[in-house]
Length: 283
Image 1 (cartoon, rainbow, N blue to C red):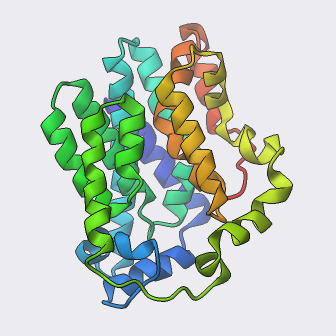
Image 2 (cartoon, rainbow, N blue to C red):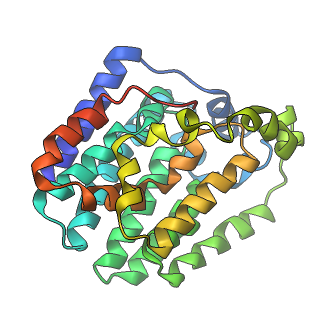
């Protein structure tokens, strides 16, 4: 899908032009892991990219930004596999690019979300094309990038074989000793997360509106995969102080569902309004 790739590249360039990039506190831990240092749970499970990319921020940039393009293209192709029109498939790709998690991954390239989501979408696309074995292999690689990959891959297409990828973080858990947590969020994740989210529990500004046009997925026929993806992604807020970057891991079924209910004559207005949607939530 050339259009999806072009939109993703353009979005990456625009975000970088507007805000540049930086290394987040989580990124510092990945760079420490790349240098051979010990990192706390759950960062010690995410060893693959630090080993491959090392301490080069440029390498992380290339990996994260390239992964965002792959993610956009794969989501568009998944929409095509569901029988959607060309216009609706392009909209699915554009919806990915307009989400806060996409722009966060441009601004903070030393993170694993973009590569992990790209591998998640690729595994789902492979399943949709009947290549289950290759999908399982992709999921296993993705699980070494971020342990979320097998679960969200499974939820996006309901293929139980993808859950075999959970063997990877289990093995990694017992083949390396994590460092002791340094901060309250690492020592007491539930209590720490509560201090961030308690006042936002019923805040549409923080938990609904950042989805932009993707929120129209509420008007699509509810599917088990979409519902469970939302339950799991929002459930992760119980132990994570980040917000939008966490629950938008449900983006694959959300973008597919939303693009399926937007009429073709509204595709361009929907794409434009989503791209310039003002509510970004809290990272």
